[in-house]
Length: 174
Image (cartoon, rainbow, N blue to C red; front, side, top):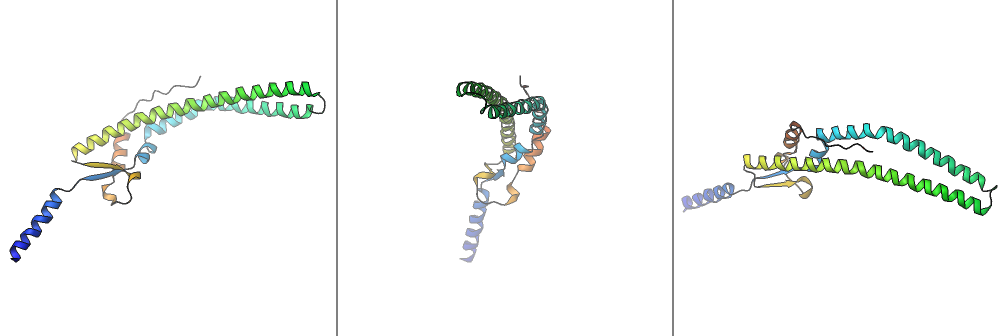
């Protein structure tokens, strides 16, 4: 009887371990943030923005001067002339805000396009890793509560991603 029970226990634990699911965890955001390709893109964006940012600062200073002039003219001009100056200022301000928004959207789009390329590369690397290591399930680190760090493959995937040269189709702002 004891031998049967012993075999049952061995068989039970063997069957549990042989049917266990191989699960890994990866932190996609850390991989994206640590991507050399994305860091390189940020440098391109920063260099491309310098000229425009200086122009925007100068134009903003000019608008502040224009607003100060309008405030000084309140005592001198009649209501109609003052409204005309305010309308001119508002049009200049709206044009300025439109150009700044267009500028920001352009760079956001460039970064998002590149991030999507990086995500696709990460997914390819995860598929490859999964096939090579018989992984049944890979979870994002933000979608689980607790795990042993031994199942975290973030560093491995980050290293592999940084070995890949990802072409940047960075489009300069015009």
